[in-house]
Image (cartoon, rainbow, N blue to C red):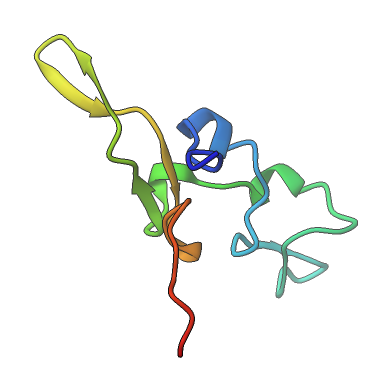
Length: 87
């Protein structure tokens, strides 16, 4: 269960991102994220094209290279991480 939100880039790009915005409206001065727009696909995760994207430590070999297979949105911390409550 620890790797539940570690995703391939393709999987991540299918998810809605709360931080993505699309300019809309008559004069395009309104930034929206969801709702009654035709721009829903543009409010998806950008995966490794986002500054918050983090690669997991799990690697795979492609020829002579070791490459990361999965990643996650770093804005919420590492999946499966545990934070000790303040005592």
